[in-house]
Length: 138
Image (cartoon, rainbow, N blue to C red; front, side, top):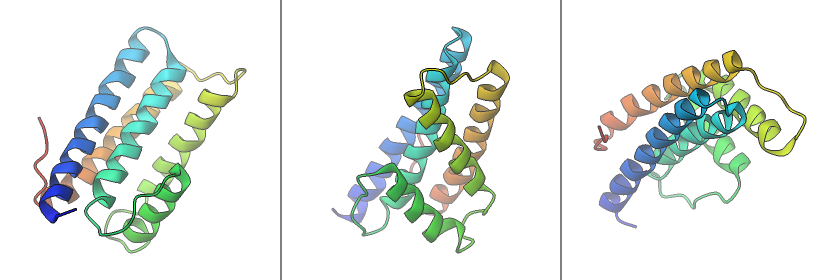
């Protein structure tokens, strides 16, 4: 994959992240809080992938691999703020509970906070990507 391809793919992944966050908000409006938790997590996940695709490393097939690589290369090194690690971890845990535990209950306030934090995460990633000359979709 050429660097131009990587930049284009990064923009597509970020567009997917925006779509996920928008869907999360729509899910809150209809009262589907588990789906909102899922979509807000995927906004974060696609944002991480949008950064990682810029590197010449094989894509990870598992979410835990993507998270570990992102944390290792961007948070532990200080390229991005280390506080983003808690946002990733919390969203991943909530998404797993919401998707796989039928008895799990998440409140509207909890999921709105997760969506808010996903937005913070995406803003940090977008700032970084703009520095890398990735065209950010409107």
